[in-house]
Length: 295
Ligand SMILES: [Zn+2]
Image (cartoon, rainbow, N blue to C red; front, side, top):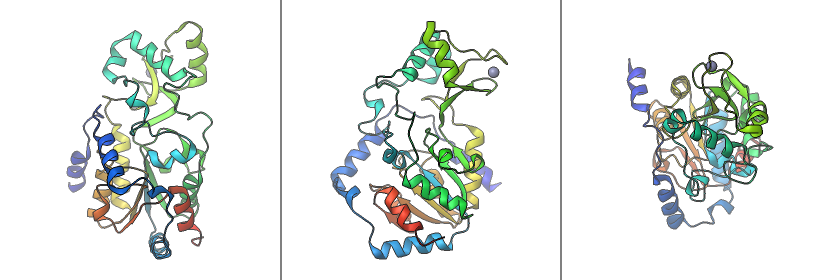
């Protein structure tokens, strides 16, 4: 009963085109200066971090764009992100128009910037590897990620431990029956004469398997994320500004439910005040240091 109630509260409004994130990121930069990312963790903080990791048995790691920037993938919603220079395609427009579908695939397969998010060929960095190490140690419950780059999978974390809130940009899926399609196959046909991909199972439209602006959040993923959050004893939010729901909802829920909360981000977040430990340091190096004596 309680879980159901909470779930309703967590269902977010569809992603909007507002600039709230960019504004607050800018304000934070003004407030805290821009040299924070160059600092390193103090010995005292490192001891506290290790202690929290040591005591935890069921960790939920929540990741945002910040963890993947160290792999060369830009934060496409950030102040210098792609959505500041390119108008995003709204889901309803994609569904309604053949021409918009074509534009969407043109962007996807463009080799000169545009929707090229540097995901192709990106490799997991020290941060992803440290989280994979938590899985190996049996301490990881789930990863809840806002990222669409698939780098947690690539770092060796089992698929069933990864909950993708915004989908995955490395493949496509039928909008009606969810059948998976590989981008290489679609690219080959589309680049010849812009033939739109159609599902061979149900004739539905095929789209990159990400959640677009205006598209509903994936219900199953949201449910799994809530279950994992309510079950964990330590919730670590990494590389997310936590300014929009559901990003802000899960760490709050974990904390309310008695879990410890750690935020690791190179800038301040709105939830820093309710944390057990706040670490404003580079992600890869800090996670690596935290895990170094854990095994
Ligand atoms: Zn289909």
